[in-house]
Amino acid sequence: MSNLFYQAQGRKPTLDQSRGVYMWDQDGKRYLDGSSGAMVCNIGHSNENVLTAMRRQMEKSTFGYRLHFETEASEHLATKLANLMPEGLNKVFFVSGGSEAVETGLKLARQYAVTTGQGSRWKVISRAPGYHGCSLGALAVTGYAPLTAPFEPMMRQMPKIPAPRAYLDGLDADDPATGLHYADMLEQKILAEGPDSVLAFLVEPVGGASTGALVPPRGYMERIREICTRHGVLLIMDEVMTGAGRTGKFLGSDHWLARPDIVVMSKGLGAGYMPLGAMIADDRLVAPVLDQGGFAHGFTYAGNPLACAAGLAVVNEIEMQGLCANAAEQGDRLLARLNGLMQKYELIGDVRGKGLLTAFEFMADRNSKAPLPAGLNAHQRFVDIAYAKGLIVYSRRTRDGTHGDHILVCPPLIVSDAHMDEIVEGLDASLAQFSHEIYTELKAA
Image (cartoon, rainbow, N blue to C red; front, side):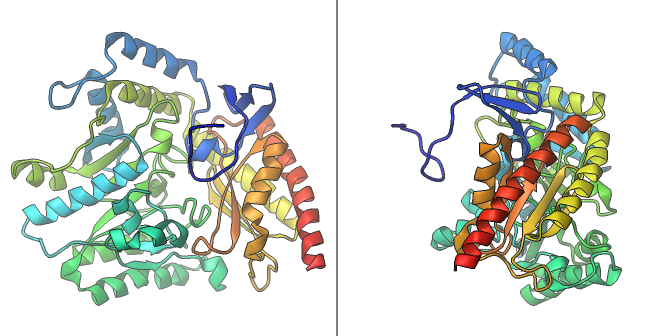
């Protein structure tokens, strides 16, 4: 019996050690981490340079409360991040995870509005499906019913617009008209809510777990930037999953001309070595807040020196190893291989992604886009099959969390050609077993 509990019942093998892209349980079985944990371990496991930086910091200090001391680690990481951001985003607030980062961005936006005479602005528009965290504030901007529904009486739901799922709507994602079609839904929502009441638009540059590596249609990102500027709405980029090189650039939004006002990051920033996240904002938003008495917000571990030392070493590894470029190159290769698997297995109805944030979606019929019956629990079944074969992947449901099944394939950015071959071989073997099982059950039904 275990005294621990998390999302569900069931037990897993006990982890013994991790190195690079591999993990071993205590029985000696090896697993290839094909999802970087939960899209976290961007530089792989047990990187010696990061461990050395952490040991060095531990010998000096493991904690320094931000109201008592400045720390070299937090100052140096803040400077490093500011230099990697779009011009003007030069103020950094550290947190311990993605939900905290999102909450921090939302609260800074609101306090900026209040201190600049725009107190009527409080609504944050986001997308459905969309996932932004599990705390109540982050859930209010999340569009994923299985996670939000139980807690709706406890929070104030924020307005949503549809995610740009062109492939499900039968639209051409490469046609600029498609991008404008979805982006203009933002303007329609702003006008419907009342422009003076809308504070911000929160968006993942490339969709994460809720939409399975959804890449926006051509022209979408630039258009939402124009709309936000026109109506005085702040654009907040949720880079919790896409940041730190995952999509082939340091920020996912760097692929488009859509400069954010606020960036929120986590996951790959700490890369699994320490809990770490950050909100980075334009100084024009921070200055009036600090001038009016300060930011009414904070966490005990904000700017923890050990976490920041690890984060700085992680970012240095991303730069020194050229991992953004490797993510772009290997991501193209992975997408091509996934498309090859799609030709082999009819149950794969769509392949998508950018860099090493990729996914494929199961469908009962490609032409109609009909999902597999929800009762088959296909996404979890495939994950379990792959896990038994020593390949770790990640899954969720694409269609509002209740139907549709997608598999995220997001290995560490250090992945090599040989690793990629091993990943695809594991997927192929898992798909063969999965397809046989699913078709057998569908015929029996």
